[in-house]
Amino acid sequence: MEIYLIGCAIILAFLIIQFYTANTKRKKNFHERIIHEWGKVPEREYTEAEFESITHYYRNTIKNSAVEDNCVDDITWNDLDMDEIFMQMNNTYSSAGEEYLYYMLRTPQVSEDELLKREELITFFANNKDAREKLQMVYGEIGRKRGISVSDYISRLKDVQRENNWKHYSIILMLFAVVGIFFIDTTIGVLGFVAFTFYSIMSYYKRKSIIEHYFVCFRIINNMISNIKKIRKCDIFILEPYIKEMEVAAHNLRGIEKGVGILPTDNLTGSILDLVLDYIRMMTHIDLIRFNNMLCIFLEKEEEVNVIIKNVGLIEAMIAVASFRENLDYYCIPELADGKPGYIDVSEIYHPVLVNPVSNSITTKKSVLITGSNASGKSTFLKSVAINAILAQTIHTAASKEYRASFFKIMSSMALKDNLLGNESYYIVEIKSLKRIIDNISGDVPVLCFVDEVLRGTNTIERIAASSQILKFLSGRNAICFAATHDIELTHILEGMYANYHFQEEVLEDDIMFNYKLYEGRAVSRNAIKLLKVMGYEDAIIDEANQNAAYFIEEGKWKTIV
Image (spheres, rainbow, N blue to C red):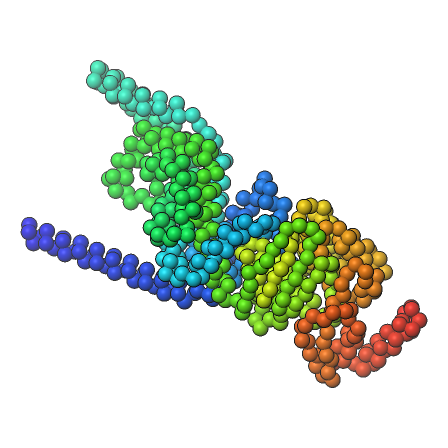
């Protein structure tokens, strides 16, 4: 017997050592991963479903919310390839962190208070390696929920059909009654118990089949509450106000924390204990009673759940921003101001995703018209300014040497496509896109808008006539418009309202050279025909094109081709 006990003790000790060693190795590997990935572009790949789930916290939060007025809308987000910006920044390890980071990039601030709070956290994490890594280890344990957003789990609870507990309390009373009858009359007691068991189990599974897929929602809430305790153990003083706010919220949700333990889990082992507990649930409906009680708490205290999600996500999102800054060639803390009219003053601004980007500077209180040939840098410059305007008002960071500007609502109309499913031409899609910008320029916050080749979907005469009036309307209202165009005519028509800038290139005998630098004034060179020669077109085509262009400039009309 003693040998048997000694053998069991040795096996148990061996298993404990194995578990401890594996856990220690796992933590060590994860810590090395944290160190390796800091300040670098994450190598993570996303499935379409996975990325879609990340957006749901943002979409669920802005519903019926005042913040929606200043959000980066879907057209602007897609125009600027902001998914790519997010992925370059998403150095997070939990669902809450990445979902809040995405939400933050979609909701620019229009006052400085929240941005200064974010800056305090970003700066702290950038300068305190040990505290940062300790916290990242916690977020690694929290982990990601694959394929579904945390906010989706929470939102599901609003759809539950509410039920009064009197039915389930009556089940317990019936159980006591049947047991009492058994001691008075055994036969009737046995028959009563069989009837009671049948009724209890049938009614139990009828209700459980409706609500059992919501059990995980409460386990998620309980897990978030336990995460607060983990963050608290990190003992990071700067997080104290955030932790206290979460602890108050968790205290108001304590009924949920206590009730989760009685709910059946998905990982039943089939042990005798599991069978006994399951039988107790069927006979007493205690888990259904607990569920209904927790549901009432949630519906009354939903905002407390949102406070926890927000703060847990915000903290890790700020770590990701600190890492993103480390990866930039250089950056600055933006200087932002309220009020109208808007202005923007940026020095050596660049596109944060491009490799070896070319920087440019501009200062303006009026709208800007940019000319130049294809591939000269017009669209990239527009995107650089627009993206940095969003980053300045979300993560308090600008990829530039200096960034001084008003708070803006940022909108664009750039990378549009035909709406084939909606049976709409490019022109219809374009004028709808521009109309949404016009509809937003009467608000309290000035609009910073970006338009690439306005009304390119129609003929030259009507394009210039209509686009000049649209651009005039935008510039004459509460907006600063950056517009790129090939129509030199617009630079003359709008000269009093728009500042003229251009990009240029040097066409060599068999090559074309772009420096991607912004110059004041309108473009004066016409290199489209020269580019045909560079690309190897027949001399006859090039000669005839030059003659036709010269004829139009001299006569004001096109020569008929015979």
